[in-house]
Length: 118
Image (cartoon, rainbow, N blue to C red; front, side, top):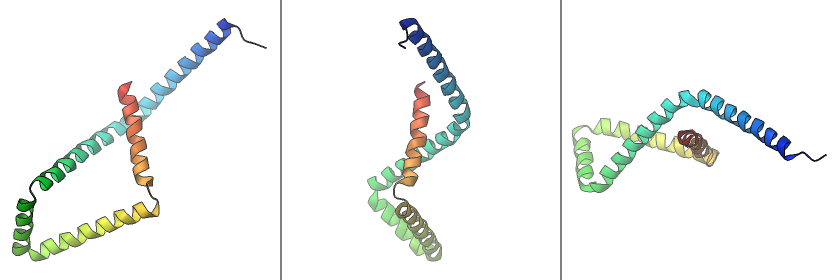
């Protein structure tokens, strides 16, 4: 049986209201994540700035690294080992499930951006 135009409009209005309620509920439930994503954005910006700073001043960074190596060779070696193992661990996670970690990050950011526009 074909629905009349009025019935279709009524159904559409009910569905639209239901969708708005679901969006509001989802926004309310994801509100605590906003603090986390804000902190992540700030940290990401700081890392980007630091990388840009180092790339703009390679000679100064080399002199600084050499100076630290001369003054505190054990401390530099210890931090270099830690950094290497952290990097190796990150690479292992990426190879174990390629893209999975970044896919999750992208999905969280997409949801955050979606609600930021509303």
